[in-house]
Length: 92
Image (cartoon, rainbow, N blue to C red):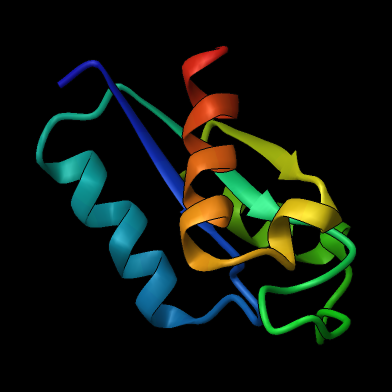
């Protein structure tokens, strides 16, 4: 596997998320891109931690790139959240 994309909130980023990134790397991903909600979370609230803190945590845990999922999509239905994330990751 050359490329893996993860669509997420990481709010807050925790050890399970770090284990997810490590597992993806372990199965052969050479590049891991994370599409992370920004400014809002799917339940319509404000993230516990800032976008910058969550992105830095993901990068420090093994992600190679973090792209922002705009707030309107982050607050949308699960299907719209996922579809927007797939669209952004496919554009890479």
